Image (cartoon, rainbow, N blue to C red; front, side):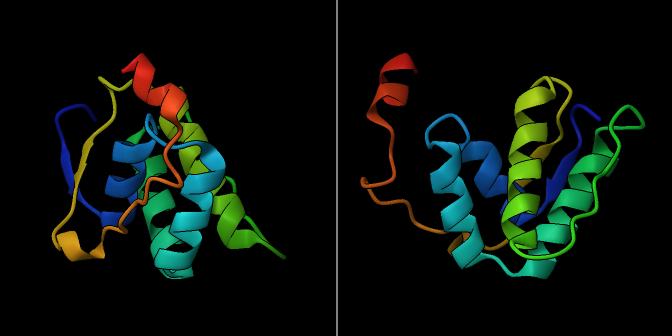
Length: 111
């Protein structure tokens, strides 16, 4: 659903940091700053917005939250940016700060 704007802080953070941070850093930051419900809701919104071509995987057991975050990252990387909706934050204070420790400098050079 290209051109659609969806309010979701979790998806906003990942969509905007996916090219700057490595996957492990995004998973760690999201796991500590977003609740399990926010992660699951965000994942569902993302899968629904990508259409019928993508089937949602329901996670169970240990590390469910981190695996859901990885699923979100994977789908955002696989789906063309032009097809993805634009995710925005209603409350910018909900977006976690990123210290320089997490930034992959080699990714900065590619930008």
